[in-house]
Amino acid sequence: MSEADEIAASLTLGALLEVSGWPKPGNVHRTRDFEDTRFEHFLASAVAAYPVLRELAEAAASRDRVPLGRYLYRAVRASRSAHTGGNTNLGILILDTLLAAALARASLDRAEVRREARRLARETTEEDAYYLYRAIELAGAGGLRRVGKGDAPDVREPDRVLREGVTMYEALRASAERDAVAEDWVSGLRRTLRVGTRVLELSTELGDVNEAIVRVFLEELARRPDTLIWRKHGLRAALEVSRRAREVLRLAGDGPVTRCRELWRMDEELHERGINPGSTADILAAGLGYACRLGMRP
Amino acid sequence: MSEADEIAASLTLGALLEVSGWPKPGNVHRTRDFEDTRFEHFLASAVAAYPVLRELAEAAASRDRVPLGRYLYRAVRASRSAHTGGNTNLGILILDTLLAAALARASLDRAEVRREARRLARETTEEDAYYLYRAIELAGAGGLRRVGKGDAPDVREPDRVLREGVTMYEALRASAERDAVAEDWVSGLRRTLRVGTRVLELSTELGDVNEAIVRVFLEELARRPDTLIWRKHGLRAALEVSRRAREVLRLAGDGPVTRCRELWRMDEELHERGINPGSTADILAAGLGYACRLGMRP
Image (cartoon, rainbow over all chains, first blue to last red; front, side, top):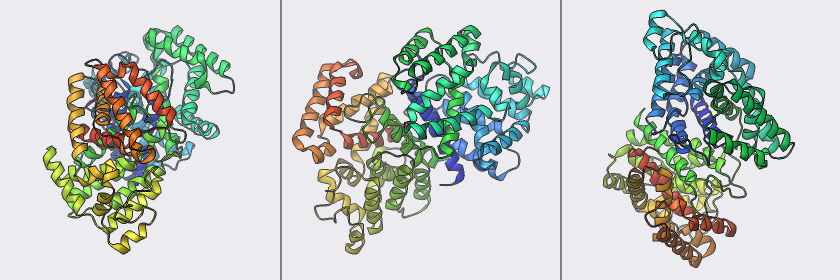
């Protein structure tokens, strides 16, 4: 298998493992669908992005500048046309396009991947931003309307980006405060890479990938309020979910967290209230892709 | 996306949708693992085969003879090294390698794909048979020891195939009576293509891919005893499972079969007894790949 295929396969599997992480409270997973977006839609999206990620990895390995925005747009377009549901993977692909390019240029070492990701992010242009905005528009992402209300144009105006000369880096930096995906992209995937390392460690230790995935998801929720919940339901709701995650981890102790009754109750309740920790899930999906590239095998 | 990528993505998604078909009684699915082989192992296997299927489709489109056996072996090897479980996709890949090659050479028309598949199957050589045997060995497939006890060498003796000049077509023809996958391969994928057409129709009609998958699985079980059950547990057990499938379909009537309590009971019972309708699932996975190539979108 070529290195570009290794990268594409790892990131694809990361997205599949993430949506199969069961039960990740509030998210779509094996036994939970949203009204318009179902588990199968995530499977189809993940596979559809594969050839675009491979091509991106190939281009990144051989060319000096990689049109990250355009690849992002193409990956979102391929995903959209592979299923009939709502937004499944915009956040994942924002992270995965950068991750694929960085992996194609660096060794697997975390610090090196991060350095390369930061460099690639800073090199993005207005054209990348234009395609980012078009990708956001195409994905029909929920709760993202407010991205860029700071010093970048509104997401509904991709043409203004070109006119005003805002780069993808600047656009995402302007959203970083309210969007964990944007924040992580701008940072050179710090959190994604940390999460990937952690889940690899834990799955090796536990011998159970699903348990490791759910546990790391809860750890991340416990550590940081989810920004999708924050944008849609307010900071208070996001902090409450973090508190619940800490509570579940406390109750589970050293035992398997997926057997903890409180976790299933939390999943039930978040779904009833329509509360979806989507940003944390995006980081986890990209992190799982890195873990797979590091050699994590279910 | 290139045509080879379209083919690989379709067959990969077919395998993912199949294992996610829920509840397909007796099989691994979203909420059922086998002791050593889990849902995640199927995800990893499906993704790992993607680049091999793409390369095979590319080769089939441009070259006259395609080393089907060697691609099968490579796909099985990639799948094996992507996870730590048991055999996940040998049967699927036997069908999918032929299907990928036929799709790369024909239009999407069922009769034409079938004609091409038959031609490709008949053109296989001793080398293809050698790699088929090695693939079977590598997969550690359950219940397959007896393949070829007729007029082809035992699967544990891949070298004898070369010495005796048995082709892949002859080897699989010798197993066709006791193995639905071999039978379908030899026939030019008749059942795979029919199942794919049916599931596409039904999922369009019902607007629910999972419901369509489970229903077609039951229809196939009802129609023909599963040959993996037959080999492992005897014909009587296989016929009993077919009878149960008919009963579930009768009870569900025109309503959603996945809501039928008897289906969940059947799943429970088959898992308790270790009865796995694996051949029927393999045909379904390949059929779903064809359906996806025809444009089925979850």
